[in-house]
Length: 295
Ligand SMILES: [Mg+2]
Image (cartoon, rainbow, N blue to C red; front, side, top):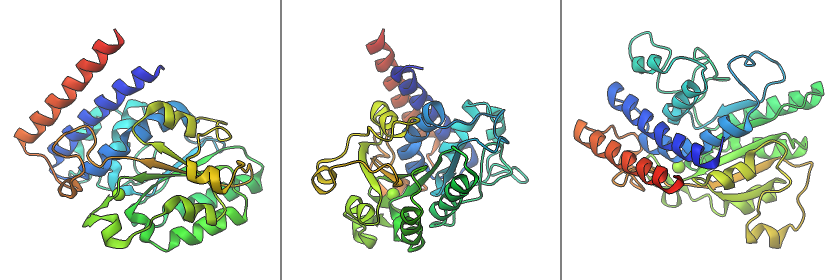
């Protein structure tokens, strides 16, 4: 699949997640829009897992630690064939497995998450198990930047480096917002790159909406080549193969819909009918422009 085909997919994913959130009357709109390009590249280019191999012990694992952005995960899993897209019409309905955080009742989901600060610890355990078993699967986890205030992340970060878990990649959805405001105002975690490096991790920084940069950082066996930011180059000139990797993905909360971008209101804002139509129209325009550009 070409980069442009993945860019078109991202637009369609955005449209789908807005529709299901509107229909359910609940959801985490802003964070789902900020991480959807990351999930697109993960599931279409990086992860070795399909509906048919989901019970294979050697499949790659993905743990969505920022579980509240599950609507993004649902639309990508549906697109990859883990379940029928029509099932998402039951989101948040009584007895539906499609609830507001990931659960293992949904095909393709590895772990119940959403209580923040646990996904990285779980991922460290999975990556360590791979090492102990002599397996070559990789483990990916997606963290929110507000989530880094949970101290358990730093215990897990320390442990991952101690066990030299180079099969582990943590992706940070660095949208600089959390539920109550700017992360720097609530509990500043900067400089994140220097913190992870101090804990013994490889760190690279990418545009979290750029398909090519995300591919370089996440695609199989490309971990020796991600472009490193100038800070990391200055502090640590060599890429260390025996270290876990943190990909800091600079993103925009609400990305793709003008009136949702960079607004704390849309952390779990649900669009009205009028707002939905406006958002879908913007995405239609973006799709038309992209198709015109690649024609
Ligand atoms: Mg955030």
